[in-house]
Length: 232
Ligand code: DC
Image (cartoon, rainbow, N blue to C red; front, side, top):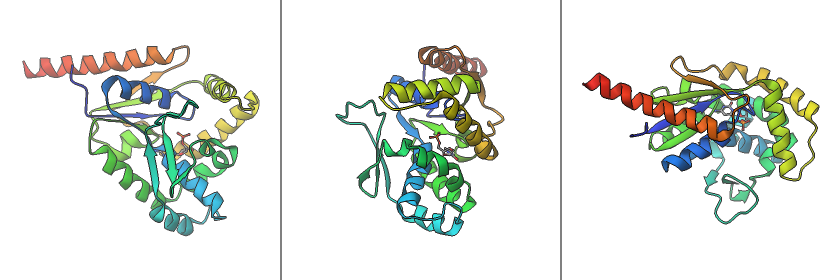
């Protein structure tokens, strides 16, 4: 079975995109690239620079100059999937802070900011052998990707998963607050979150991460069968 060189996974917050992306990338020996991290890194820099997240021009200037590096987790034993450096500073966990979550969608809304980010994402994606996770990857960043997944789940399941994840890390989490926050972010992110027309949708309610990976692997095998049949 030969896997598609680029696999995109889009969907709302808490649908399980990162877990799926990381497991799949590991299975295939591909790079795992979570594009949401880039917008979070920018939001973190906006906070630290005391910039108004609504100020599109200032945020775009910052985005153009910002050095964002996403590296393998190395020897870290804190459960991270990657290490994120912003201008050389390790901000991996700070990117999950509620202050970042509060402004990230606003920061990501400016068209010129999205142009800067999408160009960088495309440069990494076009090297191939990559699983890319985000909102607009299949529809806009990598529209020619051979396999596009749209991963969704009900709001209750997504809020419960996010709460469990924070509690597992030893943090404080209130299910109702997280649920309300997700609904707010869903509505702010909706304008960039439409699935690509040729995406395969998976609803992950009640499925374990391994079961979702198995569905995608089956989908890859089907595609390979289809293309062999087409060649015959
Ligand atoms: O997937 P996430 O929750 O880490 O994403 C953080 C924010 O970044 C989210 O509110 C939407 C935005 N985002 C985006 O606009 N486009 C992407 N490709 C990825 C994330």
